[in-house]
Image 1 (cartoon, rainbow, N blue to C red):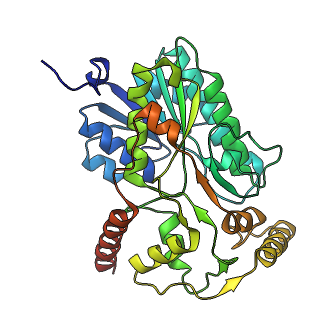
Image 2 (image 1 turned 135 degrees about the vertical axis):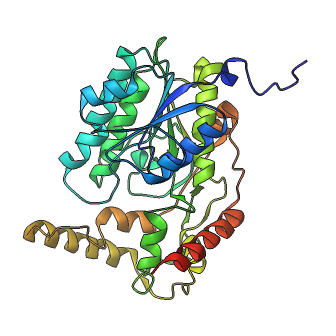
Length: 346
């Protein structure tokens, strides 16, 4: 007699699954965990990734904003994990709208035309960030009337489209992981370490934030698929997910610096000064058409000076989510990876 009450017969069936952005930081972790459960996984990205070749994962290359390419990729799938997105704190709205909004609409349409029953979408807590502190808020917090950058604005539009698409034929769910980090990170960790000599704390350092180790974030996505199968009430909902351990933002930065053998931060700048520096840099970049990303923007200044941590009770209750890997254990793994990576560098 099977005594495992946490897994329904449906959830044990091996599936054909598409992961958009499967070669990215989070996407790759999701692919790995799906493979570990015996599912057949295909990745859809702008380019191919050698790491997925080593896993024998079929890779489809295409533009997420190309409806026909997305439709071809989705055909025959039992579930889609839509992870691909353009992230960043700077740029023109149209540059974010095309992949994040049009691309997501294409995924929804393709799921419908191919009768894919489940869509798991990677959103962001920034979709509800209004520029102020967010301390222990849950999913009832509304979308703000105004956004300070195109990334959260377009991610909010995409999330709303995914949730609105939920019906009897297509079950959807959106997950909101905050500050994903860990080995193989190609965004947050490298940026912090590369700027170690010039970084400044913004404010007095009291602001706490949620983070999430990459394997915890991937596990939440896999759990969300299982939950969609078992509980129809999950469909059409968004969930905050985190390491369930709010930490001082600058303590977290110092821990990452330590993992990279860098000294902790000692210099500070006031939130007001950071905001006006961001305002000035935005004006300079726009006025003179400078390429790249400013070192400071108004959006970043507000993010660095405020608290953002969230009540993840709903994810625990509905998805069965727990943060299996602690920040301490994650830091050990990160340090090992950084040490090994630096030893392989020329």
